[in-house]
Image (cartoon, rainbow, N blue to C red; front, side, top):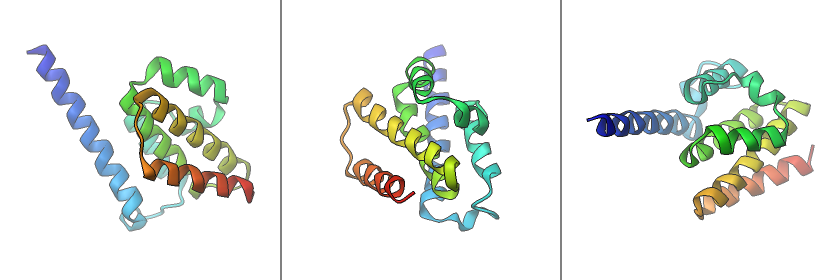
Length: 134
């Protein structure tokens, strides 16, 4: 009974992340202020139980350690997308910080899950393009 309960909770959690990211990627109209960092703060708090500020202050080495130690492999991709879309709505040094971290976690997610996704490579290309123009 405990095993099926954990599975149900995990499946519900994954569905909630999927809904949130679908709204994010398919259109920001669902949010009243899509460039407001508080929108992203809610995502970090709800799905990763850490504040946005926590992720901003982590070094890349600390982020890698956190990701490998505290997250499951299937949580890496949602974290990468959260960092990516947050970074796209940020500016200046904060944008660079978030995009570098999104790239790091996307690469880590692909390595940890041994998955291949054209969309992930497209995200990586977009990140590189943004970072090269900043």
